[in-house]
Amino acid sequence: MDKISVIVAIFNVEKYVRQAIESILNQTYSNLEVILVDDGSVDASGKICEEYKNKDARVIVIHKENGGLSDARNAGLNIATGKYIMFSDADDFFELNSVEVMYKEIENKKADYVIGNYINVEPNGKKWDNPVFNQETYDNFKLSITDYEKSFFVMNSSACNKIFRKKFLDRLKLRFVKGIPAEDAIFTTYCFVNTDKVYYIKDIIYNYRQTYNASTISTKCTKKYFDGINMAYKYIFENFRRTDNLGFYRYFYAKNASYILCKFIDSDFLTKSDKKEIFDDFKWFFNLKDLLKANLTDSRLEEIIDCIKENKFEQAIQKMDEVKEYRKGLNKLDRDKMTKPTKEMYEKMSLYDSEFIYRRERICSN
Image (tube, rainbow, N blue to C red):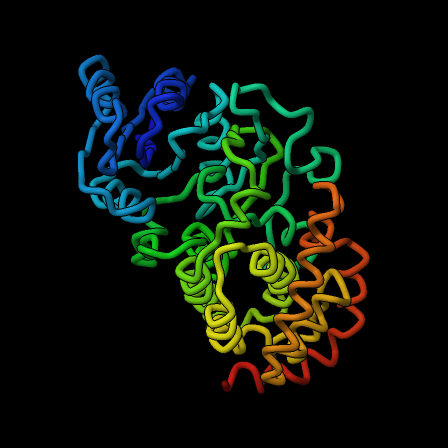
């Protein structure tokens, strides 16, 4: 049995961390190196880590000053000795056969990494009715960067529903980018564009705990957050541009442009001056919409982007305020529809494939 390193970044999660750790230690696959990285917790999380270290020789504990999720995971990666690497967040948990299922798949397929299905759970651990990826629609398959349907939908950003070959990560000299949001998306897109040996399995291997109200969090996004997202989006764009995979990036762009614009609209923490600075910083991203021949989920969002591109910032702010008031009156389901592209929207984009190909050289040369 090959050793598998499981890295858990931990920060002030004493309420959930025991379940996370025990879901790893109780796996049906036993040859594990469990690296618990206490990222400067001020609650009992660090003591709980030591408790498990004293009970199980497979547990390694790192106590460090708080540096954020990326820094904690990198600390684990720096000492990991397993043939394969897995990650878990400290408030989530694995199925008890997750490691065994993922190990068999990555070994049998000789893959660089494998993506597993996952399911959302309530704060109390109660599972939702269905996994994130429909098990009838998405059976086991090999991903392709030219597949804008199945591969696009299961190539999610999380690092936690995956198993990675350590030699693959070492070859890429890959670590998580520190200090900015969307660190998982940068990491996983870099993996995706650098291999054709990636597979998906429909088995549920990870339980993702919904511990906050996303609609409330989105109203509290600060300028610092958007500055970080801007940097993250540049990393992700460069991952695809550098490897000439902008065809796939078109759909990634369409998925994210509406989402980030709605977070921008919903935020209560931005002054008018902040908004104008963010407009200016994000122009490179919104300018891609026409070059990529990408659609957004709502015509009102398209209008806002057009104003930003034309430096009509006052008009863009006015339109954003109107959309913000409109969104406040929607229920969660309808509000989310403005951020989530539909299959019909992607099909509409596919009609412009030839025109995009004509523009690709211009984008790559910028």
